[in-house]
Image (tube, rainbow, N blue to C red):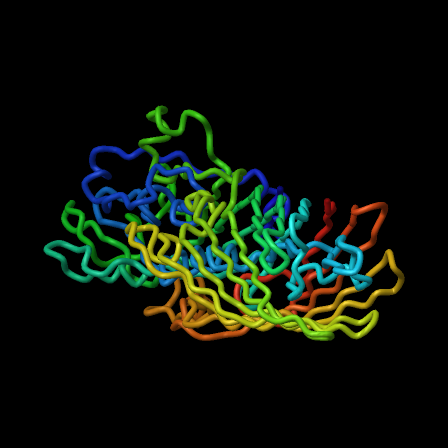
Length: 494
């Protein structure tokens, strides 16, 4: 996987981003902040908190603490929350069998209902039939490219200097200097899901969906120090003072061997190596990021229970509930880290080759570190959501069915991220003028909608064997999104 930041000068070299090797010397160690909960951790959930090294975005000045803070730090938590929330929203192919059977009292045997093969991602109310078994596997590919309508590959952020770093905690003019950055996140997920459904009775089905995920997450930040006029330290009568000159000396720089002009640096999570915890050159490096860029393993297993409560000549109604188990490793974003419960109702109509259906319900989610603050290690509840799905299946022939569904989800009190404007506190050295910059900023939690259109098909190759395909098309921008999500699967009913 390759990561690109949308700045022309970086197209050629960002894939092999070069970072400075700055050791933490005894003098520098005295002014460093404490490490956070992600320091030294290699999980994907720590990729963004670790992006600038184990201490956050600090610079190698041993005389004056060069520490920088940003609302982007809060956006880290919102981003992890968005990813965890999206894990709870990843669509799973319906475990309902494409073949439905009912008992014929006249003949004493079960016969197949001459209907369509059903929807791909939503549920119909019919049950599979007593002692029938349906098994299958699907593959889905996710390539997320926006969050709340903003591109993941071009995310601005401003880091302002910590205030009160002068002698005795005094505020100093060099604290008006700041760091601007362009940031890029490349998030890819491949999801393989094994599922099975068994008919306990004519009215009750039990199902299980077992996902296996491959996740790739590359992050990079191209950072620039913005110096301001007459705010550098000064040497007065041979003594270093925190104020005021245009340098030298300088308060902020990336390379202590070149403090005058080392104003840019590229940070990346592509530095992981097996000796990250044992090599002193890495464990004692100011900028070293130990995070991996990929993970694979079991996701969150979902159990489904379906009970038909009404069967008429043309209408069927079932009550269903999903129980999502936190079996995936949340620190590697393979799972949400929280239990989930989703009761809903499914209604199906029979009308010849056209079989409309509706699903409506609500998902409750438990607490996860991904929804809280991974930097401090605190947990919070993942947002719940109400959902409504409605669509129809069309039996083109006895062996071929088309399906179309609207899938809407209303996320309740969920985190959002946006872009604000930062205005410099003093004129910039480069222009002599006050400057304005775009910067990432977390928004207040909001209730918002995610709407998708599912277009799919199922075809009966032979006997009880079905091949399924589907495209999930995003209709709006809320949350972590991709325009089109493809699915392909095979299943068999015994």
